[in-house]
Image 1 (cartoon, rainbow, N blue to C red):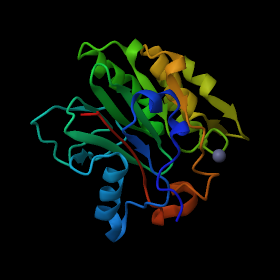
Image 2: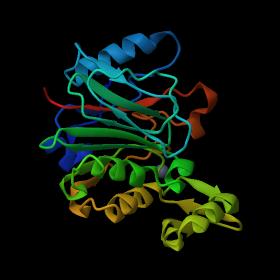
Image 3: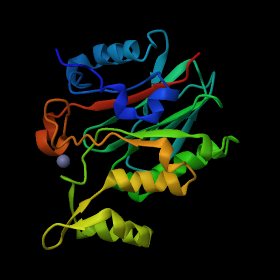
Image 4: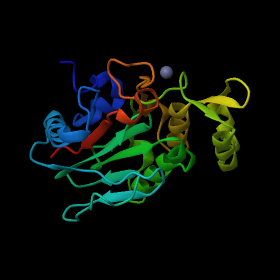
Length: 242
Ligand SMILES: [Zn+2]
């Protein structure tokens, strides 16, 4: 039985300050009949068997939901980032190539989980999340973040449509693309999201990039691009210590 979660080193500085988090491997699938068992196992892994893990209906946008004590979050709520200040609940996003980002400031009692595929990255969902946290009076300079296993710049080929969308957002996006044959580019969503976090005020040294590519690491990762419709999902989850 392979490990259900990636080693803490995957999360770099986040692991040091926010021990209650996990990036799952393909040992858990979060699909079919095993979903409930997988969520229960994940809750156990982040030492949260007694708390619920909030997730939302991910739609590749930039909406941020704030989970506060006593306020219910319906699972069909459409959003791609969850900020949590409730120590009684964890938060999670599901991915299978898209970029999962976990953010924390334990001292100021906030954590967040972000789902950033190309559309979400183009919409600056990571920036929106940091801005939402800043709106709570918490300085982005205090945040620590980890960019989890997802399709890397080695494998993530995109076409003109995607590049045009990014360049329409900001000329800075040119740095995230590498030519890869006529009409195609490799897109570095790890760098794009790290740059967005930095531009929002998170120190570069406080951001870990796992550097694990779902397209290459067959042993540990699900990949929608590689495995197709039968792909499971990998989950990034985090909670505050109590
Ligand atoms: Zn790769």
